[in-house]
Image (cartoon, rainbow, N blue to C red; front, top):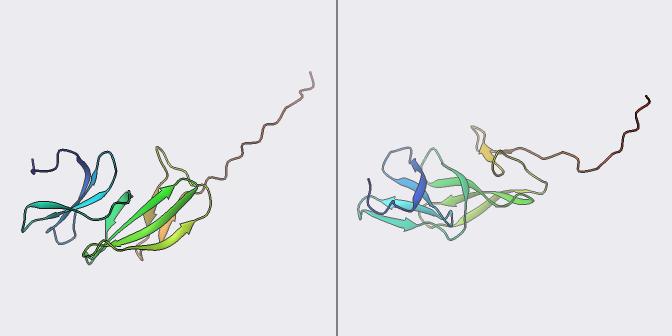
Length: 126
């Protein structure tokens, strides 16, 4: 058990295995373990989902927002600066919550909800 991880989940090692990213349970705010100090640093006070380290370890790619106003973002690890990569101006869908993933070229992927909420009546000839 790493001290300070009691309220954290979804841990991800950086590519160089020198840092750990984890999310706070209640807020889903990202935290980075500073191995030199042995302390967790709050990266930003914006909740994120499905975080991924960039190959060079300088960024965290994730999503934020709601199912109807989602954004694909990247966060600079050194500063916590958030850059919007794409705005998802459509309803998204997922198993529990909406999902955003990434291609090998770091282009965002998501599932678009194109289901219908219209109600129809069917008259059957018998």
